[in-house]
Length: 614
Ligand code: M6R
Figure 1: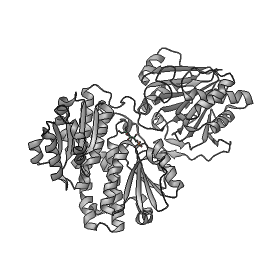
Figure 2 (figure 1 turned 45 degrees about the horizontal axis):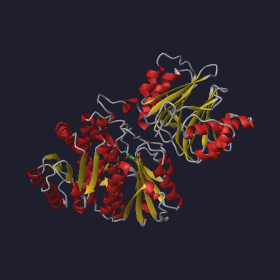
Figure 3 (figure 1 turned 90 degrees about the vertical axis):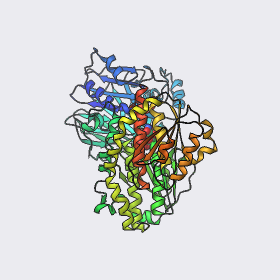
Figure 4 (figure 1 turned 180 degrees about the vertical axis):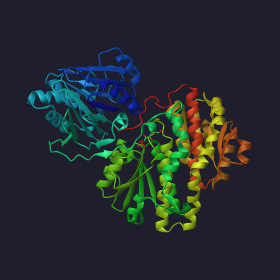
């Protein structure tokens, strides 16, 4: 949700910034801008509505000479996407320019106070309030910009990552954060700044993750300094960035989403590597092993997440309940945080987040920790806030997911839940070694079976042509296939903008059945499992009302083939592993429908990859 880039050094600043913005575009793409500090100190600001390519076109032919700069790609919160509301924003006197990711909740109050001091505002953003506040404090107290920023951030309520450059001090960048990500890259006599490490991966792998209420002071020819809002110096912990450029490129695919769908045989292998061992009869997750008492003695497990991660959490619930016989609840993090939850130190809270930065999930973690619960994270991005804020956890290790619509991260999360369930079950004794092995063996074969499933690609591309102009879709599933149906519907909504509802198949008769007619395609996830006979009845109910049916079935299924308009056959696996297979054709179906409609699947409208605001 908004991407920040910064650079101080001797390279071509503009190039570093614009290429960095392209890498961060997945975080927001309604407008972009940059501030370049010219050698004499003058700050030049260039902004443009729309994608980074618009900004690039706008900058073409301009004098972009500079040695320091900051840049931003926006996901609008306050004020519509426009040239004017795009960041950077500057102080009225032109001394400061600032970019911001997050929201300043008390911006209206701060704005009114500044207006009483004669400040004028030119945009609808909360960010302009912050930059004017910093400069107002600097001028009235005759202090440094660092001191003014410290004082201003003490007044701010909300989440932010900010970067500031100053005309009076042209060889300095200040950057601060609270609940929004910010990473410093340390080069040889140069500093980089990013919302994550992607903008500067080719230049340095030495990174420092800025913590809440810390300000990084980057000055030419001086070592990095980290201070808190009371100006106490903080320890600098340099880490190694675990990222490669190849992971950030499309590798011959037209879109990141398709690349990420097709990567799943590899990402799944990476996810289980070294964790499912001894021919599948043992599962080792260090986070669970080191904390097995917490899992064995807990009263219940609560899983908190948002969006696709919440769908993975629903599967986590079924897996853990089935295999470990521990009660599990699943909550939307956004609801949980304001629900006055009853949590004790006998609860285990599992927070699931691909980005590891989702604001609602982070807030839920803080509440759970404050009540003494043991908090376990399931995340993809190494070093992100959620893995740092949790007591322990497991990375899904599927590599950077750039497409806004989550695909490989979902299957990675489901795999991790499968391994959590299996490992707790083996410690608890709720599954025998043979039972663990029966699943574990298949788990090791899953990457190959996913590869086979991906052979449905051409069939799904053709099928998608029939349904491109449908206005609504219903997705149905039962048991393990119900969260898969929810996820399939979400994928379609996100990238094709077709309305789609996911429903437990048996609930259809309690309402949604009224929607069914020849215009309403129904996607039914119906692998051979213990609810198979039941879902066949649901298929019949749709059929007898004239609905058209696309069914995901186990290879060799003849019953549903007779009823459905189209069947997509997938390999047979144990019931608890079916989501890892059945979700693949749904990802492809949504991808191709969106492509047929000419939509931008990697950057769908209004969305952002990392939701760091409430
Ligand atoms: O990074 P997270 O997993 O915490 O993100 C949660 C949701 O914002 C995310 O899953 C969203 O729903 C995706 N766009 C789904 O494709």
